[in-house]
Length: 172
Ligand code: ZN
Image (cartoon, rainbow, N blue to C red; front, side):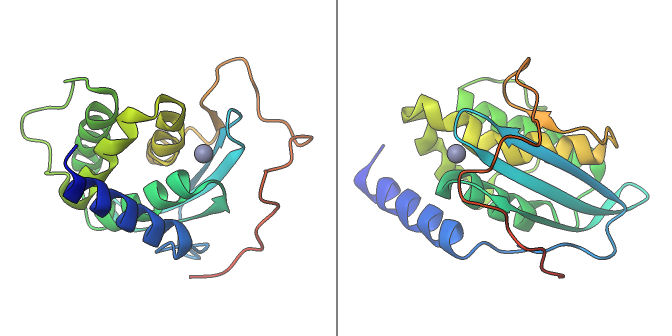
């Protein structure tokens, strides 16, 4: 990675990690899902206002590390106004970016600013932090309504306290 991209990566992720966008509980949400990454302690709830096949609005709340918070923040900015197939395709493209895969359809929307997360590939332990909000969003989109855990077999239980403490709900 060039030093310019590294600087951009750090700046953008620090900014969104400190001042997350769409960090609130969406009153009009008709879908929501919770995600949990036991390896890091990240917990996030994603709220979706779905109108037919359109993501009319999206927000999130939770407590996690800078990477998971920044990833969720930038995800909400990227998905607002997208259709369900576009959101799904963008999920694949983001996943490919982070894991070095190639499963996204050719007509997937461009990643834009989300490209800064390519740097996460250099930190394998952070990959699940970055993908947690996306898996959670997908669960909300599909209406599964279960807590998504990055570790299968490690069920999120009420005993597990989030590392950064509970976050009081804030309405959008
Ligand atoms: Zn994390």
